[in-house]
Amino acid sequence: MSLVNAKLMMKDAYKKKYAIPHININNLEWAKTVLLAAQEMKSPLILATSEGAVKYMGGYKTVYGMVSGLMEDLKITIPVALHLDHGSFDACVKAIKSGYTSVMYDGSHETFKVNYNNTKKLTKLALVNGVSVEAEVGTIGGEEDGIVGNGDIANPDEAKKMSSLGIDMLAAGIGNIHGPYPESWKSLNFEALQQISAKAKIGLVLHGGSGIPKEQIQKAISLGISKINVNTELQQSNAKAIWAYVESGEAKKGKNFDPRKLYAPGTAAMRETVIEKIKEFGSENRA
Image 1 (spheres, helix red, strand yellow):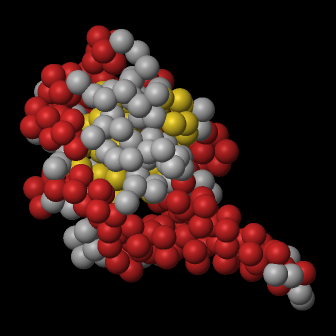
Image 2 (cartoon, one colour):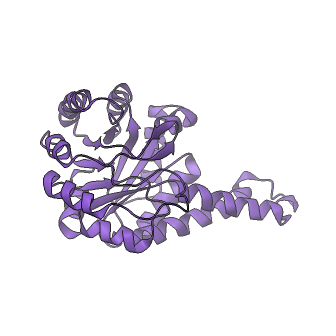
């Protein structure tokens, strides 16, 4: 199956009250593991790369070729969108021209006027190319690949205006943060979420989905969250499993220095994390 944009999967998730898993990938092992886990669970999927991950993997065309090739060779039949996460205006244009089927323009650090106008331009370009668009209002707290936010709560009226551009999904700051959540963090702002959802009337995106308690995740889905981004938890489960393998001494036995053997514990751990998230988000058997 070829890559698709995220339009239809987002509409279905919004209507039926579940969330599409958005999983950031960093290399071949990540992409292969996530695709196979989602296929096993019959879940629609958004595979995403940050600009930093694109640079690390060699470029947009390389990522597009890798993901497209994996889908063909692994006989992936679930709907999969290849998405640029937190892209600048220029990065979104490059991604669209390189075959990405979905982009997120992060104009949250600009004035709302600049954010709105750039989103408008990108939405027109994306529409011509059959690409779905995610925009952002408010800012997401924490840091991801050098993108830093203080966690400002989104303005519901700005959310309404942004959604009127014909975007497919909207990221809104509701007290969520990138990276591990500190002990002082208590809860998402559900009152703000309700107000934003009522105004935007499209599927909302929860960034910083790693570490939020399950009951809060599912309440957020019931209030309009239709896509949840996961990155940190996969990085943590991968690192923990590989570290345990090395620390146990197994990596020094025989030919276990072979990267296929050395990485195997990490990919197995990531598979379990992806399956757990799909169940938590309610996207199992939705493909």
